[in-house]
Image (cartoon, rainbow, N blue to C red):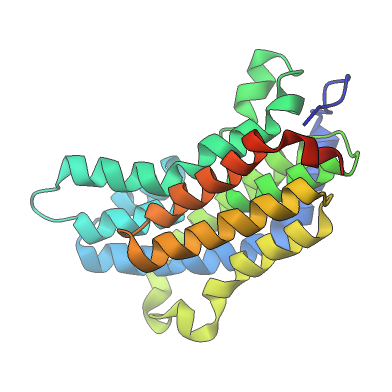
Length: 236
């Protein structure tokens, strides 16, 4: 995939626009933060520990996985392996943005990735593929996601007793529906269709038959392998 000759826009106005664009979806992320805050309190973490974790780690699924291993003695190696498996997708997500971000100076380039998450990555990539040469959705959207995640954790610590099972309300489907909408709205070629199909089937098979969280790596690698083997399909 070839990026533009000109570096993407990295301005306060673009960041502000990205913030407001992603804020409505971010409100649902706050519900996950609420559930995490409640679960973390029940695990025995203090309010300060929970809020510092959500502010500095900012990885919802990995934080929930860490809670399952939390106790008087934390199994460090399994914890590291689990969080690595869950967040390995960030390597592929960053690689897809490389054709554009490489044109930015090192400072803005790496600062823009601090708050990289699934939703703002999908929106930013879709913008870039549609010719909107800005990383405002990545940075501003990341700020919106981080803020609502942290605030949700705070509410979970203070008042979260009424929502014990967000999945019962269908909230767990919000992110999946958003990602699907980004796929359908983005630029479609034979390569992207094949990569999503192969990656999705591989991820489903791994979820069905392989250890927990391995579907993240398997699906990403399978889709990436399609792109590496059939680059010519990207022009069709």
